[in-house]
Image (tube, rainbow, N blue to C red):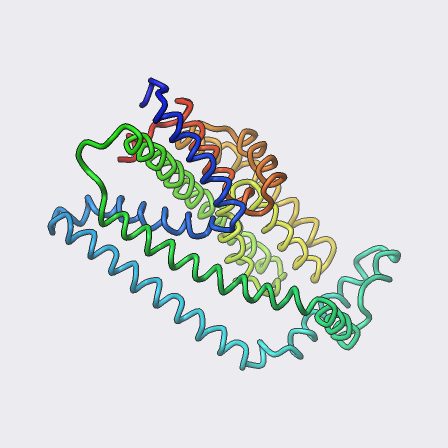
Length: 337
Protein backbone atom coordinates (compact mmCIF):
# COMPACT_ATOMS: atom_id res chain seq x y z
CA UNK A 1 0.00 0.00 0.00
CA UNK A 2 1.24 3.49 -0.86
CA UNK A 3 1.32 5.64 2.27
CA UNK A 4 3.28 8.69 1.11
CA UNK A 5 1.19 11.13 -0.92
CA UNK A 6 3.84 12.51 -3.27
CA UNK A 7 3.21 14.63 -6.39
CA UNK A 8 3.35 11.63 -8.79
CA UNK A 9 0.96 9.66 -6.58
CA UNK A 10 -1.43 12.63 -6.38
CA UNK A 11 -1.25 13.01 -10.15
CA UNK A 12 -2.08 9.31 -10.58
CA UNK A 13 -5.21 9.75 -8.43
CA UNK A 14 -6.25 12.78 -10.47
CA UNK A 15 -5.69 10.97 -13.76
CA UNK A 16 -7.61 7.91 -12.51
CA UNK A 17 -10.57 10.11 -11.52
CA UNK A 18 -10.60 11.87 -14.90
CA UNK A 19 -10.38 8.51 -16.68
CA UNK A 20 -13.36 7.18 -14.68
CA UNK A 21 -15.50 10.18 -15.66
CA UNK A 22 -14.47 9.90 -19.32
CA UNK A 23 -15.28 6.18 -19.37
CA UNK A 24 -18.77 6.80 -17.96
CA UNK A 25 -19.55 9.85 -20.09
CA UNK A 26 -18.10 8.54 -23.38
CA UNK A 27 -19.83 5.16 -23.21
CA UNK A 28 -16.64 3.16 -22.78
CA UNK A 29 -17.73 1.17 -19.73
CA UNK A 30 -18.40 -2.00 -21.74
CA UNK A 31 -14.92 -1.83 -23.27
CA UNK A 32 -13.36 -1.29 -19.84
CA UNK A 33 -15.22 -4.15 -18.18
CA UNK A 34 -14.66 -6.58 -21.06
CA UNK A 35 -10.94 -5.82 -20.92
CA UNK A 36 -10.87 -6.28 -17.15
CA UNK A 37 -12.79 -9.55 -17.50
CA UNK A 38 -10.32 -11.00 -20.03
CA UNK A 39 -7.35 -9.87 -17.93
CA UNK A 40 -8.88 -11.35 -14.76
CA UNK A 41 -9.64 -14.70 -16.43
CA UNK A 42 -6.09 -14.91 -17.80
CA UNK A 43 -4.68 -13.93 -14.42
CA UNK A 44 -6.74 -16.57 -12.57
CA UNK A 45 -6.16 -19.45 -14.99
CA UNK A 46 -2.47 -18.86 -15.72
CA UNK A 47 -1.14 -20.35 -12.42
CA UNK A 48 -3.22 -23.48 -13.08
CA UNK A 49 -2.12 -23.99 -16.68
CA UNK A 50 1.52 -22.90 -16.29
CA UNK A 51 2.13 -25.96 -14.12
CA UNK A 52 2.06 -27.93 -17.36
CA UNK A 53 3.35 -25.37 -19.87
CA UNK A 54 5.61 -22.35 -19.72
CA UNK A 55 4.22 -19.01 -18.49
CA UNK A 56 4.01 -17.28 -21.86
CA UNK A 57 2.52 -20.31 -23.58
CA UNK A 58 -0.07 -20.62 -20.81
CA UNK A 59 -1.37 -17.12 -21.49
CA UNK A 60 -1.41 -17.71 -25.26
CA UNK A 61 -3.44 -20.89 -24.71
CA UNK A 62 -5.95 -19.12 -22.45
CA UNK A 63 -6.39 -16.21 -24.87
CA UNK A 64 -6.83 -18.62 -27.78
CA UNK A 65 -9.55 -20.50 -25.89
CA UNK A 66 -11.28 -17.24 -24.98
CA UNK A 67 -11.16 -16.12 -28.62
CA UNK A 68 -12.73 -19.40 -29.76
CA UNK A 69 -15.46 -19.12 -27.10
CA UNK A 70 -16.30 -15.50 -27.98
CA UNK A 71 -16.32 -16.08 -31.74
CA UNK A 72 -18.40 -19.24 -31.37
CA UNK A 73 -20.80 -17.50 -29.00
CA UNK A 74 -21.33 -14.52 -31.31
CA UNK A 75 -21.79 -16.82 -34.31
CA UNK A 76 -24.36 -18.94 -32.48
CA UNK A 77 -26.14 -15.77 -31.31
CA UNK A 78 -26.44 -14.46 -34.88
CA UNK A 79 -27.59 -17.84 -36.22
CA UNK A 80 -30.15 -18.20 -33.40
CA UNK A 81 -31.47 -14.68 -33.99
CA UNK A 82 -31.88 -15.30 -37.74
CA UNK A 83 -33.51 -18.69 -37.16
CA UNK A 84 -35.89 -17.28 -34.57
CA UNK A 85 -36.83 -14.35 -36.81
CA UNK A 86 -37.70 -16.75 -39.65
CA UNK A 87 -39.71 -19.08 -37.42
CA UNK A 88 -43.40 -18.77 -36.58
CA UNK A 89 -42.55 -18.03 -32.94
CA UNK A 90 -40.40 -15.10 -33.99
CA UNK A 91 -42.89 -13.56 -36.41
CA UNK A 92 -44.45 -10.22 -35.55
CA UNK A 93 -47.94 -11.65 -35.99
CA UNK A 94 -47.36 -14.42 -33.45
CA UNK A 95 -45.74 -11.99 -31.03
CA UNK A 96 -48.69 -9.60 -31.23
CA UNK A 97 -51.18 -12.41 -30.68
CA UNK A 98 -49.21 -13.68 -27.67
CA UNK A 99 -49.01 -10.22 -26.09
CA UNK A 100 -52.67 -9.58 -26.83
CA UNK A 101 -53.60 -12.85 -25.10
CA UNK A 102 -51.66 -11.87 -21.97
CA UNK A 103 -53.28 -8.43 -21.93
CA UNK A 104 -56.77 -9.90 -22.40
CA UNK A 105 -56.28 -12.30 -19.49
CA UNK A 106 -54.84 -9.51 -17.34
CA UNK A 107 -57.79 -7.23 -18.10
CA UNK A 108 -60.06 -9.16 -15.74
CA UNK A 109 -57.40 -9.13 -13.01
CA UNK A 110 -56.80 -5.37 -12.78
CA UNK A 111 -59.07 -2.53 -11.60
CA UNK A 112 -61.59 -1.14 -14.10
CA UNK A 113 -59.90 2.27 -14.27
CA UNK A 114 -56.64 0.57 -15.31
CA UNK A 115 -58.20 -1.85 -17.82
CA UNK A 116 -59.46 1.11 -19.89
CA UNK A 117 -55.84 1.93 -20.77
CA UNK A 118 -55.08 -1.59 -22.05
CA UNK A 119 -55.35 -2.38 -25.79
CA UNK A 120 -58.58 -4.16 -26.76
CA UNK A 121 -56.91 -6.83 -28.92
CA UNK A 122 -54.07 -7.85 -31.19
CA UNK A 123 -55.02 -5.40 -33.95
CA UNK A 124 -55.16 -2.47 -31.50
CA UNK A 125 -51.77 -3.48 -30.13
CA UNK A 126 -50.32 -3.57 -33.66
CA UNK A 127 -51.68 -0.08 -34.33
CA UNK A 128 -50.13 1.25 -31.13
CA UNK A 129 -46.75 -0.25 -31.94
CA UNK A 130 -46.89 0.97 -35.54
CA UNK A 131 -47.64 4.50 -34.37
CA UNK A 132 -44.81 4.32 -31.85
CA UNK A 133 -42.33 3.13 -34.48
CA UNK A 134 -43.49 5.86 -36.87
CA UNK A 135 -43.02 8.55 -34.22
CA UNK A 136 -39.77 7.14 -32.86
CA UNK A 137 -38.14 5.82 -36.02
CA UNK A 138 -35.03 7.92 -35.51
CA UNK A 139 -34.59 6.65 -31.95
CA UNK A 140 -34.95 3.03 -33.17
CA UNK A 141 -32.29 3.67 -35.81
CA UNK A 142 -29.95 5.13 -33.20
CA UNK A 143 -30.61 2.12 -30.98
CA UNK A 144 -29.40 -0.19 -33.74
CA UNK A 145 -26.28 1.92 -34.21
CA UNK A 146 -25.62 1.84 -30.46
CA UNK A 147 -25.91 -1.97 -30.50
CA UNK A 148 -23.26 -2.11 -33.24
CA UNK A 149 -20.99 0.25 -31.31
CA UNK A 150 -21.43 -1.84 -28.16
CA UNK A 151 -20.30 -5.00 -29.96
CA UNK A 152 -17.24 -3.18 -31.30
CA UNK A 153 -16.43 -1.82 -27.84
CA UNK A 154 -16.84 -5.30 -26.36
CA UNK A 155 -14.45 -6.90 -28.84
CA UNK A 156 -11.89 -4.08 -28.67
CA UNK A 157 -11.93 -4.14 -24.88
CA UNK A 158 -11.32 -7.88 -24.89
CA UNK A 159 -8.44 -7.51 -27.36
CA UNK A 160 -6.85 -4.74 -25.27
CA UNK A 161 -7.28 -6.77 -22.06
CA UNK A 162 -5.63 -9.75 -23.73
CA UNK A 163 -2.73 -7.68 -25.03
CA UNK A 164 -2.14 -6.19 -21.58
CA UNK A 165 -2.23 -9.67 -20.05
CA UNK A 166 0.43 -10.77 -22.55
CA UNK A 167 2.72 -7.82 -21.91
CA UNK A 168 2.74 -7.15 -18.19
CA UNK A 169 5.51 -4.78 -17.13
CA UNK A 170 7.98 -6.05 -14.58
CA UNK A 171 11.02 -4.48 -12.97
CA UNK A 172 11.64 -1.01 -11.57
CA UNK A 173 9.39 1.78 -12.87
CA UNK A 174 9.40 5.57 -12.43
CA UNK A 175 7.30 6.70 -9.48
CA UNK A 176 4.42 8.06 -11.60
CA UNK A 177 4.22 4.89 -13.72
CA UNK A 178 4.39 2.78 -10.56
CA UNK A 179 1.54 4.80 -9.02
CA UNK A 180 -0.59 4.42 -12.15
CA UNK A 181 0.08 0.69 -12.18
CA UNK A 182 -1.06 0.53 -8.56
CA UNK A 183 -4.33 2.37 -9.44
CA UNK A 184 -5.01 -0.08 -12.26
CA UNK A 185 -4.24 -3.07 -10.03
CA UNK A 186 -6.74 -1.83 -7.44
CA UNK A 187 -9.43 -1.39 -10.12
CA UNK A 188 -8.77 -4.84 -11.53
CA UNK A 189 -8.88 -6.38 -8.06
CA UNK A 190 -12.17 -4.61 -7.26
CA UNK A 191 -13.65 -5.77 -10.56
CA UNK A 192 -12.50 -9.34 -10.02
CA UNK A 193 -13.92 -9.51 -6.51
CA UNK A 194 -17.25 -7.89 -7.40
CA UNK A 195 -17.85 -9.91 -10.57
CA UNK A 196 -17.05 -13.32 -9.13
CA UNK A 197 -18.87 -12.62 -5.87
CA UNK A 198 -21.94 -11.43 -7.79
CA UNK A 199 -21.69 -14.49 -10.04
CA UNK A 200 -22.05 -16.75 -7.01
CA UNK A 201 -24.93 -14.67 -5.66
CA UNK A 202 -26.70 -14.77 -9.03
CA UNK A 203 -26.24 -18.55 -9.29
CA UNK A 204 -27.79 -19.09 -5.85
CA UNK A 205 -30.67 -16.74 -6.68
CA UNK A 206 -31.26 -18.54 -9.99
CA UNK A 207 -31.37 -21.96 -8.31
CA UNK A 208 -33.95 -20.78 -5.76
CA UNK A 209 -36.02 -19.06 -8.45
CA UNK A 210 -35.84 -22.17 -10.67
CA UNK A 211 -37.22 -24.30 -7.84
CA UNK A 212 -40.22 -21.99 -7.65
CA UNK A 213 -40.80 -21.50 -11.40
CA UNK A 214 -40.02 -25.02 -12.63
CA UNK A 215 -41.02 -27.18 -9.64
CA UNK A 216 -43.34 -25.52 -7.11
CA UNK A 217 -45.71 -23.82 -9.57
CA UNK A 218 -46.01 -26.81 -11.98
CA UNK A 219 -46.67 -29.13 -9.02
CA UNK A 220 -49.59 -26.83 -8.14
CA UNK A 221 -50.89 -27.02 -11.71
CA UNK A 222 -49.57 -23.60 -12.73
CA UNK A 223 -47.37 -23.48 -15.84
CA UNK A 224 -46.10 -19.98 -16.50
CA UNK A 225 -45.28 -19.01 -20.11
CA UNK A 226 -41.63 -18.47 -20.96
CA UNK A 227 -40.54 -20.32 -17.79
CA UNK A 228 -37.02 -21.09 -19.04
CA UNK A 229 -36.63 -17.53 -20.29
CA UNK A 230 -37.58 -16.28 -16.83
CA UNK A 231 -34.83 -18.40 -15.32
CA UNK A 232 -32.31 -16.98 -17.80
CA UNK A 233 -33.47 -13.41 -17.08
CA UNK A 234 -33.10 -14.09 -13.35
CA UNK A 235 -29.49 -15.18 -13.81
CA UNK A 236 -28.51 -12.31 -16.13
CA UNK A 237 -30.23 -9.63 -14.05
CA UNK A 238 -28.76 -11.18 -10.90
CA UNK A 239 -25.32 -10.11 -12.10
CA UNK A 240 -26.38 -6.53 -11.26
CA UNK A 241 -26.09 -5.98 -7.48
CA UNK A 242 -29.34 -5.03 -5.68
CA UNK A 243 -31.24 -3.63 -8.69
CA UNK A 244 -30.92 -6.88 -10.67
CA UNK A 245 -33.30 -8.66 -8.29
CA UNK A 246 -35.82 -5.83 -8.64
CA UNK A 247 -35.79 -6.18 -12.44
CA UNK A 248 -36.13 -9.97 -12.49
CA UNK A 249 -38.85 -9.91 -9.82
CA UNK A 250 -40.83 -7.34 -11.82
CA UNK A 251 -40.68 -9.52 -14.95
CA UNK A 252 -41.77 -12.59 -12.97
CA UNK A 253 -44.74 -10.76 -11.42
CA UNK A 254 -45.87 -9.44 -14.82
CA UNK A 255 -45.73 -12.91 -16.37
CA UNK A 256 -47.50 -14.39 -13.32
CA UNK A 257 -50.24 -11.79 -13.77
CA UNK A 258 -51.02 -13.38 -17.15
CA UNK A 259 -52.16 -16.46 -15.21
CA UNK A 260 -53.98 -14.80 -12.32
CA UNK A 261 -53.68 -12.01 -9.78
CA UNK A 262 -53.33 -14.55 -6.96
CA UNK A 263 -50.33 -16.20 -8.64
CA UNK A 264 -48.75 -12.78 -9.19
CA UNK A 265 -49.16 -11.93 -5.49
CA UNK A 266 -47.86 -15.35 -4.47
CA UNK A 267 -44.85 -14.96 -6.79
CA UNK A 268 -44.06 -11.56 -5.33
CA UNK A 269 -44.31 -12.93 -1.79
CA UNK A 270 -42.05 -15.88 -2.57
CA UNK A 271 -39.39 -13.72 -4.21
CA UNK A 272 -39.43 -11.25 -1.32
CA UNK A 273 -39.06 -14.16 1.11
CA UNK A 274 -36.09 -15.79 -0.63
CA UNK A 275 -34.40 -12.41 -1.10
CA UNK A 276 -34.76 -11.75 2.63
CA UNK A 277 -33.12 -15.12 3.28
CA UNK A 278 -30.45 -14.30 0.71
CA UNK A 279 -29.74 -10.97 2.37
CA UNK A 280 -27.57 -12.61 5.02
CA UNK A 281 -25.81 -14.81 2.47
CA UNK A 282 -25.22 -11.86 0.13
CA UNK A 283 -23.85 -9.78 2.98
CA UNK A 284 -21.46 -12.58 3.89
CA UNK A 285 -20.24 -13.08 0.31
CA UNK A 286 -19.98 -9.42 -0.65
CA UNK A 287 -18.76 -8.35 2.80
CA UNK A 288 -15.95 -10.89 2.68
CA UNK A 289 -14.88 -9.79 -0.79
CA UNK A 290 -14.95 -5.98 -0.48
CA UNK A 291 -15.86 -5.32 3.15
CA UNK A 292 -19.08 -3.51 2.22
CA UNK A 293 -22.66 -3.89 3.40
CA UNK A 294 -25.73 -3.92 1.19
CA UNK A 295 -26.80 -0.40 2.20
CA UNK A 296 -23.37 0.96 1.25
CA UNK A 297 -23.66 -0.51 -2.25
CA UNK A 298 -27.23 0.76 -2.57
CA UNK A 299 -26.19 4.33 -1.73
CA UNK A 300 -23.29 4.13 -4.19
CA UNK A 301 -25.64 2.80 -6.89
CA UNK A 302 -28.23 5.55 -6.29
CA UNK A 303 -25.65 8.34 -6.40
CA UNK A 304 -23.82 6.99 -9.46
CA UNK A 305 -27.08 6.39 -11.32
CA UNK A 306 -28.28 9.93 -10.55
CA UNK A 307 -25.03 11.43 -11.86
CA UNK A 308 -24.13 9.14 -14.77
CA UNK A 309 -27.34 7.24 -15.58
CA UNK A 310 -27.31 3.53 -16.47
CA UNK A 311 -23.48 3.36 -16.87
CA UNK A 312 -23.13 4.73 -13.35
CA UNK A 313 -25.58 2.15 -12.03
CA UNK A 314 -23.52 -0.70 -13.55
CA UNK A 315 -20.14 0.73 -12.58
CA UNK A 316 -21.05 1.75 -9.02
CA UNK A 317 -20.21 -1.53 -7.20
CA UNK A 318 -16.80 -1.86 -8.90
CA UNK A 319 -15.82 1.78 -8.47
CA UNK A 320 -16.99 1.80 -4.84
CA UNK A 321 -15.02 -1.36 -4.10
CA UNK A 322 -11.96 0.24 -5.73
CA UNK A 323 -12.45 3.36 -3.59
CA UNK A 324 -12.54 1.26 -0.43
CA UNK A 325 -9.31 -0.45 -1.45
CA UNK A 326 -7.66 2.89 -2.11
CA UNK A 327 -8.76 4.19 1.29
CA UNK A 328 -7.43 1.07 3.00
CA UNK A 329 -10.96 0.05 4.05
CA UNK A 330 -11.21 -3.03 1.83
CA UNK A 331 -9.17 -6.06 0.88
CA UNK A 332 -5.91 -4.94 -0.67
CA UNK A 333 -5.04 -5.56 -4.30
CA UNK A 334 -2.13 -7.75 -3.21
CA UNK A 335 -4.72 -10.36 -2.22
CA UNK A 336 -5.72 -10.63 -5.88
CA UNK A 337 -2.17 -11.15 -7.14
